Length: 629
Image (cartoon, rainbow, N blue to C red):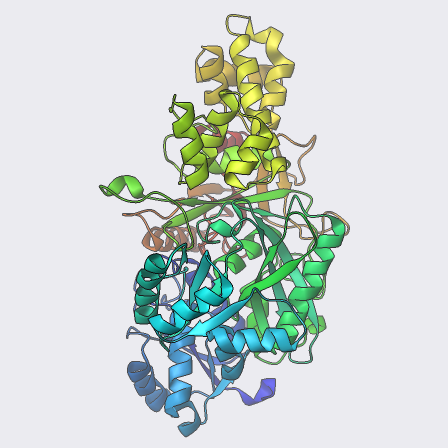
């Protein structure tokens, strides 16, 4: 279908916010609607979630607040008669609905073309057996596995492969109903649950590789087969934990150059094998002791990782994917963030990005806090800085769980700490800090957790700095300028430093301003400053000497504070409030509306929604730093 032949496009949203499908699909759907409307094409949106920004009349031409289910969408198609439908911007809900509409013959009956990745390719990604066959026929490795449609078949497959085994469920999201089985009894329980949740009553019994590294690549591919990888990400907690519950760093920190390129090529080949048009997320497992790897799974759509990659790199993934679905080629698209480069340019990062999930376990009694293959987090934050220590501490503060940075957990018993490290709960980073304080070696912690020693050594740097600051208690602050400067570089807040030194936060702040220990404002330009590019996408760091932008004093400015991470009781509705505040201020003639927020799943953290965007902590210290600029 050529670009000129589409006059009306139907876009499916993801419906209600749920674990595994949150605000990231409001962000991707909003970008898709903008990209389609730019072409002069009429848009129709199906999404019953009134809290989302994409249902605002500023974005969608027509909105149907009906369930994203085939029987309801079929009625919309009958009434609206769209030329094309986009399935990749509403999560697994939209994909499943699109596949069902295709199988029912509704799309064919009304002549509706699936724009972007075809239904055949979507089926190959979602059906575990088809996926395995497609990937292996392309000469790419996958873990030893067998598809099962009953408990008996699953038990037989596990006997052949050998325990422990990983159970994956077809056509689900967030690792729903999946798990690791170490015995027949455990397997029966997981498979019974998995078959009930699968749209096609299928599970995959797979060799367990929970100690391997988990790496992700975001791949863009046009209909002619041109591909680029936009971002690679490393899951710090490895294959043991679902990527939605994992602590993710971009770019990867512990891969060799050779490993990086082996996995990059494999990701592009996987996208080619499945004939992706637009964007896809490829998840790979890498043996930490060799270059052996497996393709684990692919999402032929925008995902949580895609939203993170987009915000981490400044490459507008959903916008570009929409244009590719409309028939553009990669080299024809200009990156709107830089205004200079085409979509063929793979972003270069001169900074580190870290995503940390937010769990709300404290709201429930008797809950299992262990992390595993099923996603449990309700939100996430993203921190940007110049070193790993800095972004880890920033992310912990962004979670708004009452911690001033990386502090050790309260456990005193060495055996309890060992058990907690082995089990891995939502407190894992604080448990690692406690273990280091107790004298555990980096190697011991690595053996217990499978976390790469490089990350543990970085956590040790934070623990060592905390001990160093505590040892300087009672000394005049003016004698500690260089130590405080170094502490700020690795992410310590004024409050943290004050607690260590036994002084007030105000005293630390006063010293900083007096002795010029001040952060600088850096921009995300996707190019690592290889070309001159002026962007409005900013972060604050102590890892630099000068600001990347100039600050004008002659403008009327207003700062709008976002809502931060999603949590129970605070979700996408507050992003709707943030964006409506931004639009209202612009309508009232404010020259510069500045948004401060740290949630990569939101529309308010999109590059073109405000005059300036600071991807930063919502703390008094950081907001004052930005106001001071």
